[in-house]
Length: 244
View 1 (tube, rainbow, N blue to C red):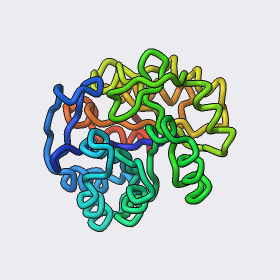
View 2 (view 1 turned 90 degrees about the vertical axis):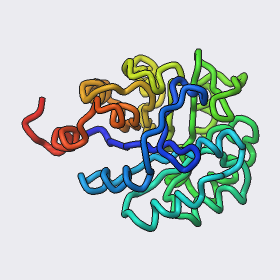
View 3 (view 1 turned 180 degrees about the vertical axis):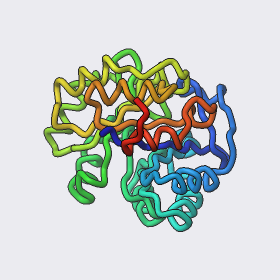
View 4 (view 1 turned 135 degrees about the vertical axis):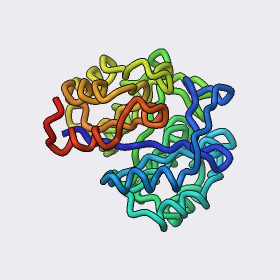
C-alpha cells in the first residue's frame, strides 16, 4: 500500500501552497499546527514540512514552528527548506525533525551531502530531486542546475541513498495530476528505491494511479486545502474500506 504523506509548506508562519514553485502565486490556508492536528486526529502518522522562507533565504527560518509541530503532535516529521550548513541540519534535528530532505546541497556541495549521509544515515537523510524539463533545480526551485535527473540519482544511490523525494515542478500546485511517467521511469531504473512522488496530485484517483504504477510513497498538499481530497475517505481507502 502506498504511503500517504500530507504536506505543510510554510511562509511567514502560515500554511501556504505555491503554483509551480512561484512565490508570486501563493495561497494562504491557515495555521500549521491546526492542520497537523487534523491529520493526526484522522490517523495519519507522517508529515512533510517545507520551510519555504528557508528555501528562499538559504538558511533555516521556521525552526520554531517545526519545534511546535514536533512537541504538540506525535507525527513523524520530515523537514526541508534552507538546509545549507551543519548548523541548519543540527537545528532541524534538535527541533524535532525525524528526517530531513536535502536537495540544493546535494547539487552545490556533494561532499557535504555525503558527510551528512554518513553521519546521520540513509534513514534520516532524504535526497530531494526537484525537476523541471529533466534538470534538477535548486534554491527554492529558482535556479536550474546542470544535473540531469537519472545520473544525479545514480550518483547518490551509489553512496547509499535509500529515500528520494522527487517533485515535478511543472506539476506542483497545479492540481493537474502527478507525473506518473517520470516516476515509473525512476522506479524502472531503481526498483529498490523508496521514491516519494510529489506534485500535481488532485484527487484520490491520482493516488490510486500512483499506487497502481508501483510508487512507494506520495506527498500531497494543495488537493487537501482546496477540498479535492477528503482525508477521511482517503484514510478509509488505505485501511481497507469498501472504496474502490
